[in-house]
Structure formats: structure tokens, C-alpha cells
Length: 173
Figure 1 (cartoon, helix red, strand yellow):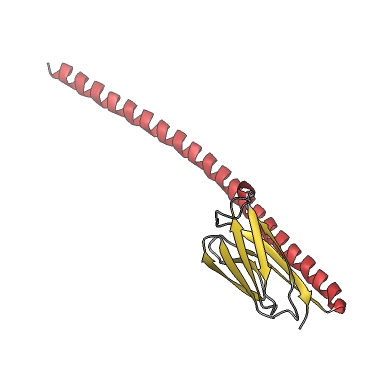
Figure 2 (cartoon, rainbow, N blue to C red; figure 1 turned 180 degrees about the horizontal axis):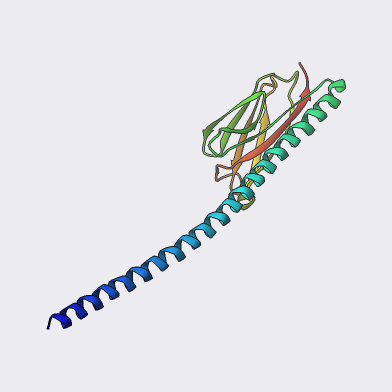
């Protein structure tokens, strides 16, 4: 009887050891998978950082090109102010202006340096999913601001919040 009890205990111990061995094997497999995932995530992080760097470089390139245009137009006594405004009226990029949202689809851009006369303003919607509609850009006679209204229809009856870019060109003061 004692031998049978010891045999049963030995079987239980061997069973527990087998289960522990299987669990240990599973842990090693999971660890290997986790290391693979970490390597892939590191590669993805590296690629994302590279893409973000490329975007930043392109933004800098765009600023350099506009600065070059401004320098070349300087002999014509022209001023150029440009930027991008988010749906909420905050500035995404640009300089020498402030922006605000006056209501649904209604924005204002106030120039840091006024133009010598009423400037020409070009405005375009940025979101490719929200292109339909009408944009009304009205530069002030004083040359110190642009009032912008954006509508989701071509009849100018439904105001809509949209991200937009603008360029204002006019004579320097």
C-alpha cells in the first residue's frame, strides 16, 4: 500500500512537472513573440519618426520658398502673408497674423503688419473630404484683415467649419 501511495505521489509530481514544463515552454514562446513584436514596433517607430521628420522638412522647405518669393517680390514693394487655419480658428502655421473664429463657418485673419491698401486674398479649403461649398474672402479696405465665410453648399446658405489656407498679397505700407 505504501508503495502504491508513493507511486501515486510520484505520478502527481511528474504530472505537475510536465505541466510546469509546458507552461515554461509557452512562456518562452510568448517571450519570443513579444521580442519579435518589439522589433517590429521599433521599426514602425523609426519609420513614423522618419515620416514626421520629412513632413517637418517639407514645411520648412515651403517656408523657405515663400521667403524666397517674398525677397524676390520685395523690389515690387509687395507684402505676402500666408498661413493655415484649423477648423477651431487656431493657427496651424504661418507668421505675421492672428486668427479667430467668429461663429460657424466665420473666421477672421488680422495681419500683424497692415497692407498699404486692400490686398488680394486667395483662400482654399484643406480637407479633401469637405471640398464642396463656397468660400467668401473679403479683405478690409484698410488692409489690416480678411473676413472669411465658408459654406457647405454653393448657395451660401449653410455655414460650415473647415480647415483652410490663405495667401494675401498687396502693396507694403
